Amino acid sequence: MTSTSTFSAARTYTRIALLKKQVKIMLRRTTNISPDWLRKLELGIDNQWIRTFLVYAFDSRNLCRAELTFEIDWDEYKFQMSRGKTTVNIDQRWVDDTAIEVDEVIILFNDFVQTYSLRTKWIVFYPSWIYGDQAKLSEVQRTLGLIDAEPINWAGPKQGTSHQIPEIREARVGCYLADA
Image 1 (cartoon, rainbow, N blue to C red):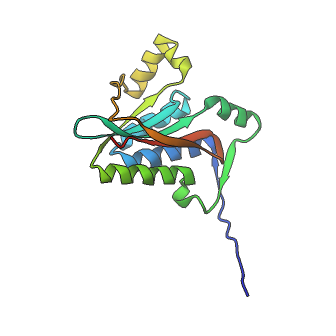
Image 2 (tube, rainbow, N blue to C red):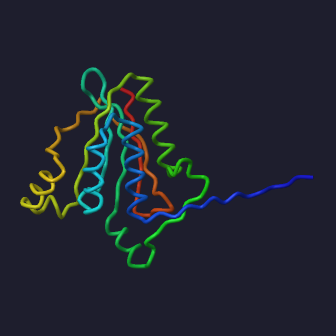
Image 3 (spheres, helix red, strand yellow):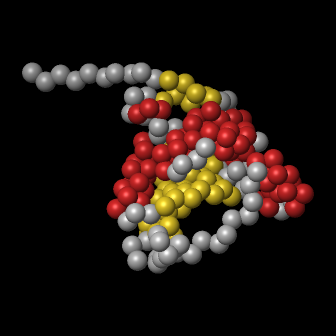
């Protein structure tokens, strides 16, 4: 006789808290980011000043070989909030409160980084409304302690994909690799 069972240890988070948690997990597992920087980036999320978090992996020639992305669609976030979806329930499939998609791309990225002995660096992109207002851009950069990043030079063509996180529809996570 075969039997199955289900275990539901659902937890509930506010949408913003769950977004911040995913970003912090991604950055802590792939870079040597400090707690001070994480607090500043959380402020950037709270104010909807950051739309994309990226972790790049560079080889000894300073060429990029891998990119890990976490994107927040703030319009979708506002839409979800307007529909009363201010909280998100997650279940036991989210190991250590990490989205399945986030966990999988972190594993892929870190395996690639270790295989090729790469070093990582994180950067962020702001929403277009911040780039369109020089005074606001200066204020955000000053408040968060950020500066303009240098252009990224890739070792070769990159291939990869991104996935929406079903429980937090405003979030996408992706991984792109260059084998050259």
